[in-house]
Length: 391
Image: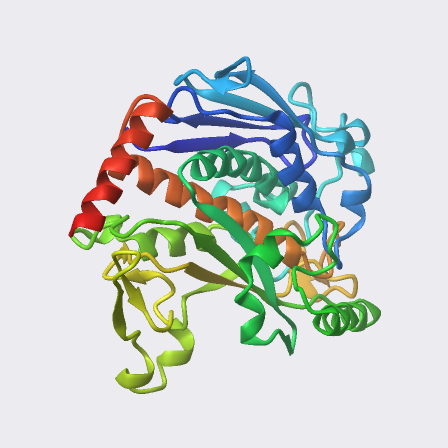
């Protein structure tokens, strides 16, 4: 059985919930490690007022005993503190309150799920749509991703992220080389960059956008080390590792593009500049690449190099200086509704990206090595690595 998870909950509802199924038994899980990932998701320069209200912490409802998985489904809950101010507007019972108490939204925001979702489900209150479409949902995904990260750590795989761009400010390529330095960045870092000059330029770009009443887009990169050769497959479209990673990152709210390795850059060049020459390290008994333009994936499979995946974040759809829109009820022109928002959640997007990449890799490793317990899975992994060394 493959690894899977479901989330439920609205942005201003009582809580977010996650159910994770398929983890092997005996996997050590520290609740503090999940909470740390949730706090990291709340950080970064450019976040809005909602993060001043919430203090995300996980409650474990099932699937763990004495700090380890049982092999049964794991249920997690994250309470929304802001629900205290929304109990009437988001009540699961009774009638819709009249007037402002209902917090009805009839002026959809261009670029958001408001209009298409309202038409799809036949409602004239876009609140029914935007509550679930909100990126608040990614807190539940981050909790699921923390479980996946725990499994990856036991198998020697590390996952981190860096901020590649904020608006027109782009970090240099050599900033991605020191993964240990990225992992060592403080959880409250304003941008995930190891260069103070880069951080200063990126935060300045955020300030400029905020002063204009605007949002700004950006790019993050997720890096994974320690993934053995041959994870994923070329035999079917839905088993290709790059396709699975691409879909996972594109599922994150506001991500509109994905690149594996140097995929975008090499598209305009020739083959000699696109591919990675193969070498052999006799001491380590492994094949090597002299570069990593492929981003650690060739033919839908991991090739033993660092996996690099980029997500391109569009400027958020909620603008303090809102765009023109049309009222869903009267069909008259109005300015779009304004909800609490971020100028750019680029650090948070990177953390959610880590969670989704970790999830896909954990799923692919379970698929590759199997096992009902961590001990069995690790033994299968070790036997495979020995076979690779003997190849």
